[in-house]
Image (cartoon, rainbow, N blue to C red):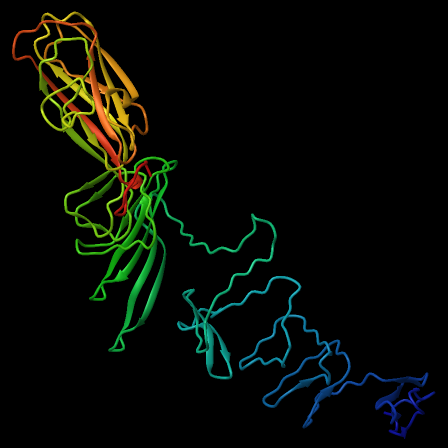
Length: 463
């Protein structure tokens, strides 16, 4: 073995020659060299079986390192932009800490295993702020919990910045089921403590399957709230109907429940109520069916139909007569008080139904019904009436006690304040026996949405 001699090199250069076993230290670059072999070539690679140091600093790259520590700390690098590459796995029995503003990046997927060896029943992942404030927890069952004590926290924001209408943020509740009608797909609970500190469900949204038959799939969603005794009760149910594109909706629960609509409510079908139906504002409906009372605390605005019994005895000529809208006597003058009425709103004559008796001597011909009106500020006379619409139907001698129904087409026949009369005329004269009766019913529709007279005053024209 050679004699150990110490030499030094100048600046960063290695010694020109070192004998076998000679050492040289370059104080400028802090490098250690030794001579090996007969060619006296300096070599800087040194192998030591073990190194014990109070502080071990590596300031250059390490191509291979095998270490074993029983205790102590290890520091790599001296700058934030240093890079340290490890091949294989890193196992830490304690905490792994990264510096402020640092990040963890990956060139591919990152997989986080919780309780990989499956020996910890309580394994989970936690995000903690300020050393003690837990922000997020993901437990071994897949339950994700967010916590916060600041304004509007915790919160979840889904922000999409695409201009494409087909790209948007969404939340999916997915469940794999087979023929699972009535199965809950997803549920959202709203929980809080009561006055005794008991965690209570105050509201819940549930989405379920209703029909899972292929080609007939239908769903159901419920909105529930706690009803006085912490029991969750359905307040709104939206579900698949019995036909394609039909959706059924059930609102509220219990006969004493109250459903309030702020603003207007438009109903395209019938309204059926087993309890009270009330409106503090205008209500416009096409069909109302209720087994209870219907209350309107405001004006009753809509179309109202009224039935007039206009039956009379007689008529044996071909002259036009007018139905007795106010009394029991027909007349050839439409302006008489028994044959005309002053209407309170705009409206129309819907239909007139006639049932004659004893037509044995009647020659077959047309029965003609006319709707006639006289405007305001016009002197009453037969010629002052205008025929708004005419309907005719054929009657014969064998039609005794048959009903003849005539339906009118116009949307409106009269305006507020006008006089209304309904004429009746036969195509030919006949001579029936005494006590020949004509039973007549007229249906008149008043549109209270177009009531011209709404205030005390004098009117000389329709409003």
